Image 1: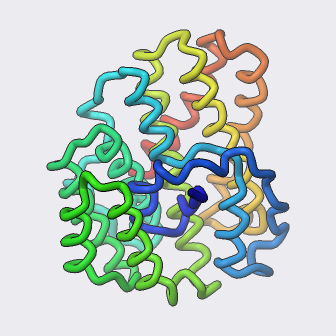
Image 2: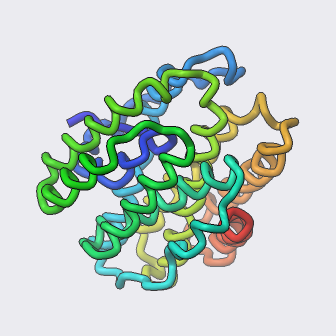
Image 3: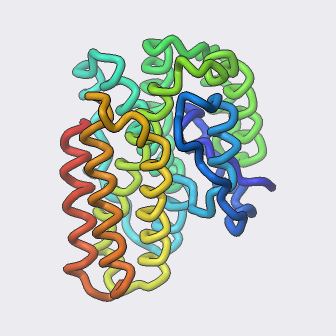
Amino acid sequence: MKSIKLLAFLILSTAVIAACSNSGNKTNKSAASEIDDVSVAQIIEDLESIPTPTTVELMSMINKLGLAYLYDVTNSLANQENYLSTKQKALNLGVYAADLSYDVAYQRKAETEEYLRCILTMASDLNISIDADKISSKFEGNIDNVDGLIAVVKDVFKESQYILNQTSQTETALLFLIGSWVESAYICVSASDLAANNMEFLDVALSHFEYAATIIKYIESRKDNADFAEFYNDFTEIMKQVEIYRTDKNNSEKFDGVASIIKRMRNGII
């Protein structure tokens, strides 16, 4: 089934699309040089073709490698009340979506339900129209049914379509993407000590890190915007460190060069 790369735009998609991972070898389409010249729908279409693991694919890989669940790696739900601005809410909506993916991958049902409730509340705060009662009911009823969870995603897609198709929501979508990527990367680097010298893990980690290059393309036209300037610089530095790391994936110091930036970015977001 076609993999849906909606890391930036669907509130629940990062938690349920691990079963739709067969498009990993597609060639990435050219990202628009100016984000304002394309619609959100076009951005989604571009993201569908990026050959990188989705958040759940990344989390599932960590799980399949037999790595233990890290109880203190996700963002505390208690922090939700601290996010007051639209920027903070959009970033941490992405963070919590990645955390939800992690819990789903490890079948942490209690945590999954808690993070789902948090996500639905924050989505409402951002004026993203989702029928929370219906989505929660369907999600809970299909927690062990992958096809059922995919159907839930389609419902979310339909109910939030009017938001996602408005270019005026692009900045919120991009902030969501950044938050989700950073949290996914943070969970990845946190698990790295448990997967020391595991080349399969390191290959997946590198693929996720390299996705930073695509994020740069989407925020480049906003690099002078106060909300995006620091992120642009951070992602640019990450790619420099990724190039160094790619030359020697067995060198833990080179991995740490990427990890240190990711940890700093994550601390600044949550």
